[in-house]
Length: 247
Image (tube, rainbow, N blue to C red; front, side, top):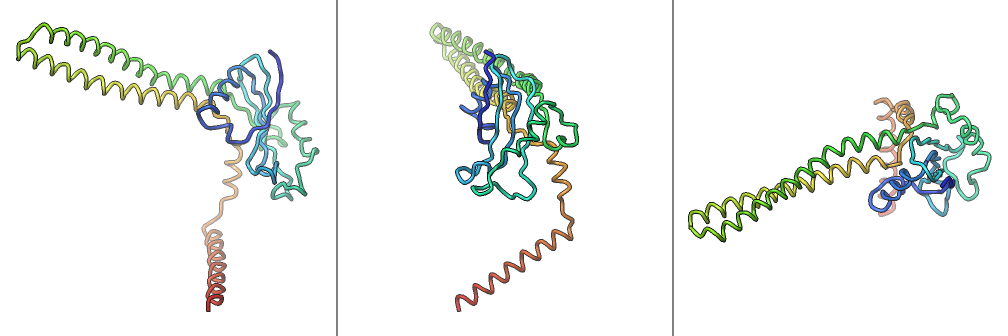
């Protein structure tokens, strides 16, 4: 209770189902996961190339809001490596942001954002409940159909008249068919509800400002044609070199 921790996790642990999903759910329900620092892919090169994250949390109360901060490499860096590793002073902006926790300030507006994960989970549960109730209704119908089949079986034992037997068997077959249909509805409804609900525990939430930046990086048709022409020119040169090599 009240314990604090910080851990390093790869991007793959922030998403996915199975054990990873259950761990994230337990973390969000039992701890206050207040901060996720998103690090670039190359922080741990040459030992690992995957993107990693720093997760900070306190035990004892569920998570309501998660602050995300995207650490960016210096402008003259294409990637971290053994000779140009991440430097301690690069965390100074994060330390500065940590105390104010604001996203609207100019120096933070493109790297920090807050997510109300509790609200996301609440809405997901409301949407999932529609399907879970449908599954429950299906289970109730199946239970009722099985009782009716038991009643028919008893009547089949008591009434040996051919016409009565045929009618009862037809009724029984129809009930068996309805049970099969309902079981499929139950299965699909449960899966849909679970998918909607557990998706709320995904933590791989991208920087919303990146969309605007990506828009700013769009190329015109003329620029795309120039890029394509350069690519084709390079390919043609390689082809000519290959032809010369095999003569």
